[in-house]
Image (cartoon, rainbow, N blue to C red; front, top):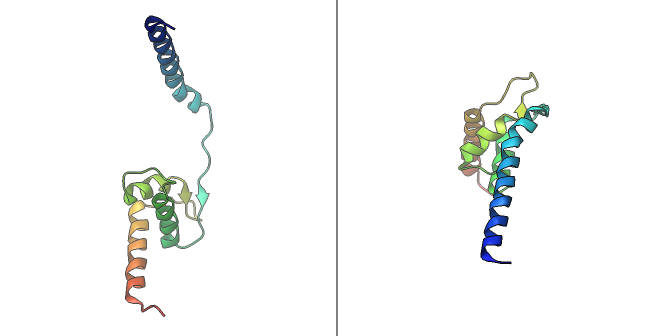
Length: 105
């Protein structure tokens, strides 16, 4: 294959990719979003689960707080109210402080 043919194929593939990429938002509008999970555990437990997922690379985020912010939209309390990332962060921090103060046997 000549260089000009390779360039032509590359341009064609790029154009098709851009066309598909432009259609994704239109497609996603037609898909109903999933309802959030109802978390019945303790607040700090949810925070710890999210941070474990982030630390294992299963949540793509720029920081632990960003991971909590992203995940909050996927969980609600039993009364249907959403979680606040700051509340989860504070719960995890309090739990960590308590764990540091306890002697290990």
